[in-house]
Length: 484
Image 1 (spheres, rainbow, N blue to C red):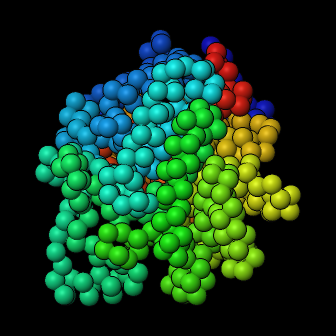
Image 2: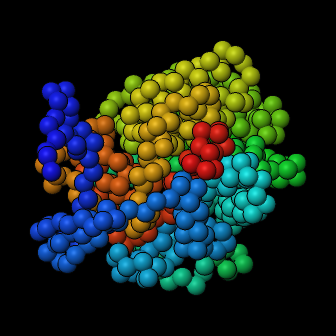
Image 3: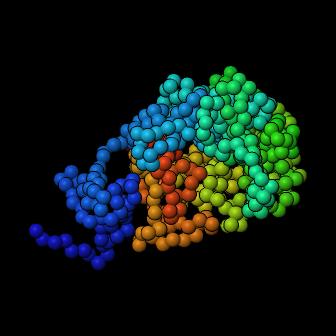
């Protein structure tokens, strides 16, 4: 059989587009000794620890969505309706799955709430509406369980659980001093977990700014895509209580100890005048404007609009927010991309002043132009939701197609690859490589940097909302059809 000769301008197969399969997601060992292909196109890989089979599986995106949704409901829902990653008692062994608490249970249940909202808006499936309501019920309960009026918990666990993350502890004077030396803004908290009044739950305090930001996105989607008039009133009452708590405490989230939580700070006195908080000034200013805009829209109470305009005109919060995309590189973290994302729907769609609306649209354009290189369907579809069009659609579809069905957070070491260079970008403080497809980095959650060179924790299985949320956004926007 004759050979094939390349023309001068042709590229060898794999020279530009190729994939690398390494780590326990794909191989029993990275020491590969031989590879053979069968007639079905499956690769049989002989490794130092045995033979691995890499097989093709044909499915539509709708098939994949059904697969992930089934996994989600069976393996990643815990009472009362918390959507979370799960623990693998034996790392990598999915038969040893157990529920586990997470600092960001509220935030990622909010992502699930948004997903079910888009699913309902697209399909009108009553199951999606009912499950969205259950997710909101949990977020609503996070405020009720604290016994206060507006402070809300990070998460809850059954009172019977003996183990949890960040269990209550005491600090010696030396330990307290060491904590402060390591981080001047550190807030050592001895009692993070509190028993509910009915004795059924333990709730976790020291709630962060990430939580309310994530909640806002879920509330926005639920309010606009699912909620009837009765439920809209319930959302308005719930969120206004949270905002009143912030307003009463100079825009800080104040825990049961009477001081603000480690990250729950939006106060002008702190953001504008305390240099230790300069790294948070731009993002937190954007967040507080969005919180107030949402509260005003859903309650029609002028006090929220008055405070919103005061922060813009007297405290410079819009000017602060404008610096977000040109901030000191050492202040940037990858998750700030998505904390910004949570704010844009409210600010752009609820702002009625054309001048302010244009400012937010410009902010969105800068955000998208800076971050579209991440090829994230979450970024791309959110942008298209607000700006129209089908920007970066091919990259979004490529991500959804390539994301592995396996949700174990396998350890991935891309630093050992000869085809990749380890760098300090786009996030200065982390060792990273050039962006690879999702099949070649750790199981995704949108708070995690896909560029990181070495990452993964096989003692956990992630929930697939990271995939399902942009998928249903794409379906809602008619950028993805049910058949393709």
